[in-house]
Length: 205
View (cartoon, rainbow, N blue to C red):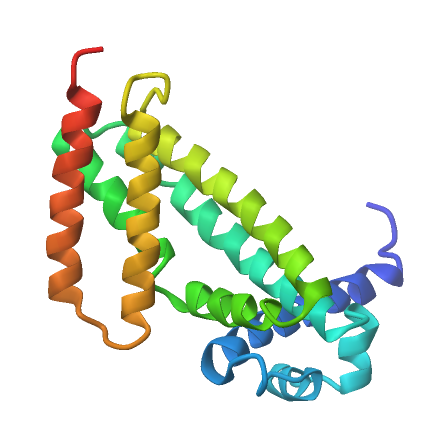
């Protein structure tokens, strides 16, 4: 076994610092909004200096775009990991589980943080362009993920529109969740949408 290079631990520390900054940025954005989430605030929460933060992310916009994308990728990966499980479930139970998980994408801290980023982007043109591109890419990924989880063929009449309607509904539940965590109501809506979606999926082609 060869000698351990001096750069290995340094690279590990750099990756760990970057990850702490990303996670701190998401937490700050969700709790304090755009105006209260400066680089200095994020760096303090992550336990690093402002200079260290700016070494990893040149601008505040770079930091928050990377943070939202990072956590989005993490959450999407967690949902994709459900694929082996849902493939063993058939019929309405599978549809209900998938709807429940997709709604979960929009009712956690990631969505809250992303919403603050959208609001900020509405007033700042350079940020708006970057957020629009990120959201378009994320939207396509979530739609593909939903089809995979459901085992659905979007060429079948009504499937594409119903799946997109599900994602739009989930976003609406995420907005409602910002004001009050009404789990009982959300569960009823999830059950209703799962029934609607399952009916479309089982419809003869």
